[in-house]
Image 1: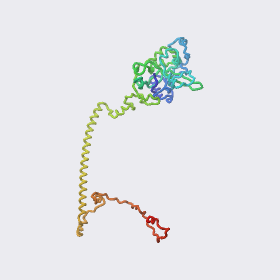
Image 2: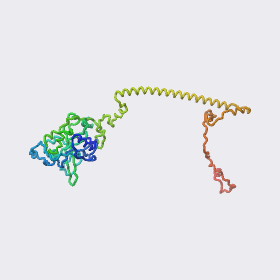
Image 3: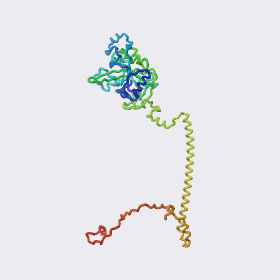
Image 4: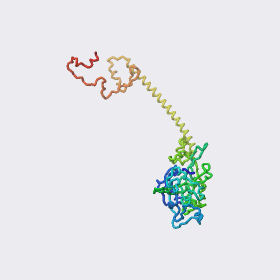
Length: 426
């Protein structure tokens, strides 16, 4: 089963890749018509590569065989031979279609649950010439373009734990899945709706552990892909049936982030292995990034260099710290000596009695104490005090606003005009 795939590239890039592989693209939809996401879910509009035919399918001039009658199939002379029309070269196009095939005879739009039943088509259901796929398998064959598809591995008791895995081509090329398409027009609507389904087959030995089914993968430019898309083949044949087989090429499968399980999520990390260094969501890579990013030989050399440099740095640091300690002790000792000396000299000057007036020359020879020197004078309590820096503005009184009192006249002695402060004296 294929219920989710990746399509995180623009349609212009898909067109270029197909043309480089020898697949002609004469017409292509706009990039905005196809959903560009790494978590492509059913109901979205994907990129479908097919022959440019009418909405009924088949090449121009081919016999219309929508009835699917066995009698008409038996009457075909060239059962496995394509109907050739050399007058017109077949044109191919990239078209935007909705995933989940809706048959052309549908009258009303089905609900989402009904649409999910037709996102895949089993290859064994196409063997017999009957069923809902009869007209599509004869004249409406296509190829679904993607980067790879997802599948969930069931683990634990009852398969309760589901681990998503991503499958892609080992060469990294685009993956072309065999599919069928149809065009429906509901009653009362003028709009045509193009839808598609992906054909599945048995898993190859490489993917047996993951699931028992896998989509049919075709190689670009291969004869099988050319036969599958040939619009001149309007009858189902053994040759077409033989194309629907497990893929024999090399694939790559690995577990990815569980966030892909929610349809609304979208991230390029969904197609990157969980254990990969490129996966930003892997928490192990966060701690691994702290280590060295060089080669193994360079890592060992880097460790030796870092170790020796670390030892040198520690020695230098210790020497610097020891030098700092010596400087600090020396400066502290000198400061304390200077402080004690200044205290002793200050006390001596305080205790000495003033000399007679006759020694006037000595007083004139004393050094003048400046404002900066006064900062080192001891206070009466024995400590040092810092001088008060004079302010440039006049201090404001807390009890007076500085205004000059008015010169009032004689005191009034009348009881009605006493001062209000007399009330508190009583």
